Length: 115
Image 1 (cartoon, rainbow, N blue to C red):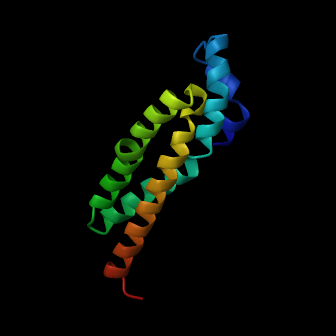
Image 2 (image 1 turned 90 degrees about the horizontal axis):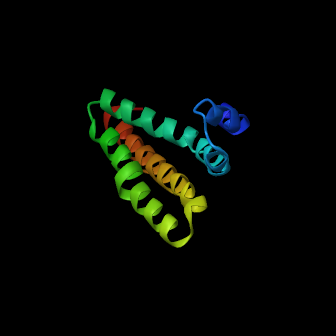
């Protein structure tokens, strides 16, 4: 996350990005990088759920993130606000997937682990 926030230009130049790509890509990488902690937690919750015998948590977290929210919001933001706002769809999808996974794993832990 820190590398994407601090060095987006250098990362894009590794792939021979044009000036136009740099103008779009630098803000995009910075916006997307802020969602990495939420994505990490969502993935970890999915693995914990799988370890507890409920692989559905992993599948639901990924589906919410990619299909249910990300794709429609990218389409909406691109169509009505412009491509520069498309990257904010990542925030919506990652935070929502994190919350869904968090509450799912919390429920699973209550069922499987006695305190």
